[in-house]
Image (cartoon, rainbow over all chains, first blue to last red; front, side):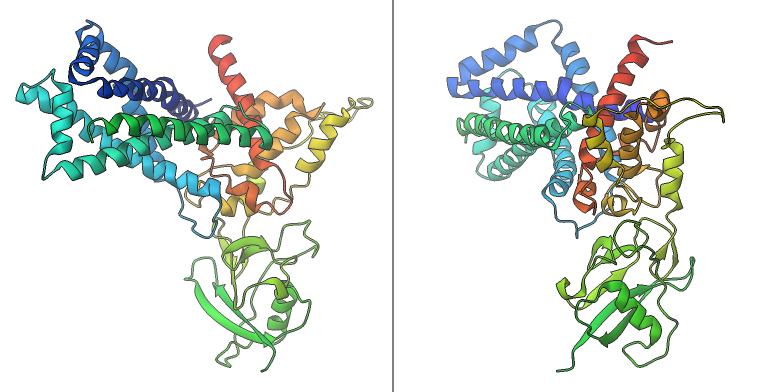
Length: 205
Length: 249
């Protein structure tokens, strides 16, 4: 066993635990957008009030996320483009890589928009107002909405499809029959998480 | 209308020269395959401009899709040229050497990296010494059914040509060698060194380089369940990873 193998396995693992689980929790939290500004802000701030909030974010989210992203971007340069092999799994293979890069860019913009931006301007705490004013801005609103739509759907796709390949990488789904079952599950998961995310976004659309 | 077939062939005069395309038009013979057409070109090596050129070089042997030596890229997809029936192919027919192996000349490639991969994973039954070891262990019927399918691999290279993770610039062992590891790791005698095979596959170029594109299983002319083999070896290395961490020696 060398570090190359270990890094790839950590890359595969971090995509699901903790980053994938964080995505599910994060999407769940956004459903509070429908409960109005006061409840949403209280929910989000209650997390940040914890003395461990910043450590939780760094250790559970940022380090695994950026490790996963850094190695993932490196992986893309190992791929050979072969357009003549038009198989569904091969399409997913490329969508996984493209969505990975897109989601990384989205996350950087998202963290800037919802964390560092408000910190610098001193408006931290009014998360709902910050998000909804960004979405309803007459000039940049349409861009913000498009970026969020693509970013959120990309993240959900990357997670659902990643879970599918995770099961093959670790030898959880062995036979073609069980691999199809896992694929059906991941497709269902994609639609459920997408529906949840779109419903949450509809509150401030 | 004269009944002819047009072949566009990607040629290369030697290992280090640039490839170029050449067109050949030959009479259509019903029920011919790509190899018989290449033989026709060889008999009269004249390109579509009417120039006499060196005959096209290719590899072939068994002519019944069990040796793998005539593997090439036909109409952008990798397959054996012996079983590529001309009447079923879109015209003009394009022939290219496999892109994942060094070209020797024209359509002939050097696939020794595949043999090297089999040596690395020790894809053989280990039985040391000349003395009588007695009868081998019996293989259960359930194993035989899987093993027979896996043993049909002819090291042709289709899985590697179609694989987006396998290239001339890396040292990935590829689906064929991973599947052979599964075959020998389940063999009652050969499984004695199962751990050594897994060790090899847990290095750079091993199973971690698989990107789950699953082109291999689609491209395999023998319908070997390659993704099942990759998942099974994935399971075996997961177990070994666990014991490397929690039962460290």
